[in-house]
Length: 501
Image (tube, rainbow, N blue to C red; front, side):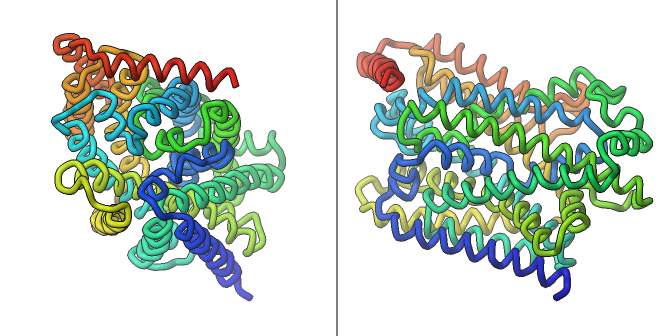
């Protein structure tokens, strides 16, 4: 059999597994809580790996290796910032969010939690949150579809549009029917595949390039500063911008929703250990893949200015392994892409149904009605994102960075304040979300603003100004509320009790 046939077989097997998991989850999904949150029954391993897989997307296997390949270790500051941010997210957000969302009317989405926590009778928080999720997740889902199109184009020479279509149909299919459980179970499997692939490629690659010393020498022959975190191309604003990616974790609905779904507070500690361990090794693998790839290309006179750096992982998988194993490596990229698309679709679906439709139009329908609405919402968002992704020139990293900043700035400060500060008000939260989202959006879409501030990443001004707005407006509008105080105290007591078990 030809190489392409072996690789195609591996991809088909992987796709079939995803569909079967979706069918299994469909059989276990009956209520809206099941569809949106899996009945709050996830174990620590599934929580950790599904959060990691949902988080990293095609960025981990395509965006980051591409950036390291082109610009060197100076791009690794993003990975450092993300690792710190993810660890803080597990420590600061996971335990409290798990308890507080249950205490506060058993909230199953981030907007519904903020609505219930702050007693927002106007429902504006729910609606504004839902709109922010819709806008930024549509860009995020679009980035995944761009990754899918580039993947099939690079790996199989397939038309970009056709590749994008294949990824979209399979991912939308299992998300549509299986809901949160399907997304979490498939993400768990995808997280394992991604991890193994990212560990294997650099390890095998170092042997092929002649060992560590030869590999380093080859990289430095291309650029003496390529392995320097503090290369001359690094600027203060650039390093701050890269590390600031870590701030985004506090406001990513598709990641923190996993904390709401875990079985207990006690298991968040185990999930943290698994998740951060997976993340560190995977990031090292992604960076190692880029560096080994650069060394191999240098040694074999394959350096080419026309080469799409974001496909370095694909190229190395095909060079280093038997075609079937290379196919599994390719499936790892699909895993990264599809896991994130699916997670974002389910959160966007919940925002449309639970936070906009339910709040505005229909509060008394059956769970079956809402689950059907959730599936329609998945389809609508996927179609819009598909059309946005039709341009293959879109940069994966740019699309992801824009959406990541939007969520981090809009929700991050408000989530932290809601969990830790009694005096946050509904108007203060609303002000913080709107200021954070608008600043991040304008900063990211008006080049002149960014240029005047040395290219500072939009999450920094968005997060800081959103936090300031939320605090100032809350202090102005705060009035003691016995129900909110009681719920806050109940959360702290339950959190202490859970930790002592």
